[in-house]
Image (cartoon, rainbow, N blue to C red; front, top):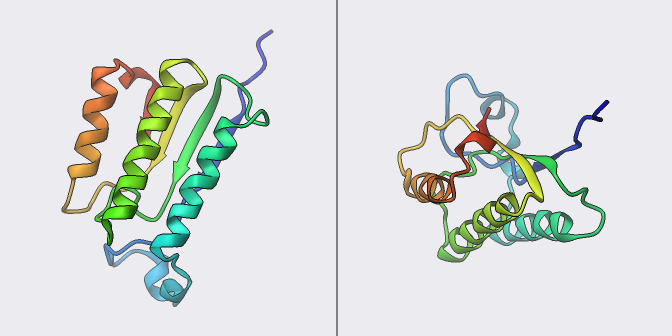
Amino acid sequence: MNRPKPIYEFLLWANCNNHCKFCFQQHQGQKDTFLSDEQKIESIQSVRNFIASKDYIFGSHVLIVGGEIFGGFSSAKLSIEFENFLDFLIKRMVVGKIDLLYINTNLIYSNTDSLIKFLDKIDSTNLFSRLKFT
């Protein structure tokens, strides 16, 4: 019998600037706990380092959660770091280190450049069947 594959869940950051009426963050004063761009970059690097480490189990599933991870970035440095992170995840999918990639997002932001670029790369590597949006 096959054992279930581990699922690693990573919360990159809780930041979100969509201001949805239904969002609990708007009503609990959590804006002051949002990460700075430098802290977001550190979070991305920590996740990347773990997935690249010997502690990560080959062929596992990865779930990426964030405020709005494809939303507009407040700095070019953060945008580049996030794009490099997505490239890293795709490369790990191509070689089978990541079996399924789950991305938790509500997809309601106006700037979709980062999302479209990511989906184009997923398409070019024929990985759509292993990408799940939640």
